[in-house]
Length: 248
Image 1 (tube, rainbow, N blue to C red):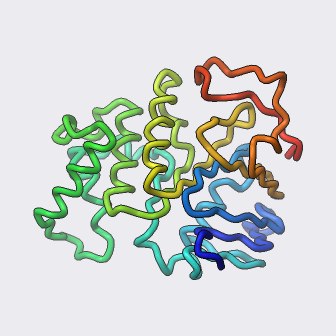
Image 2 (image 1 turned 90 degrees about the vertical axis):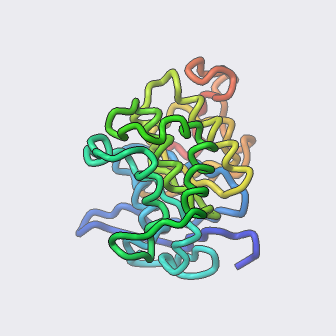
């Protein structure tokens, strides 16, 4: 593994029962990448994230994360899953949600130091939610909930941030704000983000992986077929409609 490789999939296959989800998938995420994995629902996007974290194991092939097998260096990874009903109804303040990002490896009732609380304040400030610290998480808008969950994921200063459909539960009017925020975070951490939307991909990312059981990696925009270069107005000038050569 080169020093720049963060995640490497080499011929990875995975099935749930007899249903093959991924077949012979190979790709590399390098240090500093903002990597988007796109494809249809059920195509294997979330499965790739679960394999990276180590929640599940591949049937074939090899995966390395920071030069080790998945799960061995979990302290270097921040993970933002999709919204759940549990998240939306969570009856605790925003600050307590973000503090959960420091629970790993501690007791069930952890003691938080002044340093811990400073990290939490810094994470909330970075995400623009410090003023909401004492508000109940369940009362927040979708965009503020998402910012809170991202703050929880980055409070431990991870080197790799994984996001599963980060704008799926927010209004289209604030999707660009979320992407702007992720672009700023990308200055200090590698990001892998999944989305089901095959219609467009943001110019914020530098690599795109198209997955629908098989996997095709686009390492530059020259590898994408633009549709007349028209911009998608939902994201102002930052997003371009694309048609993938891979057709998956």
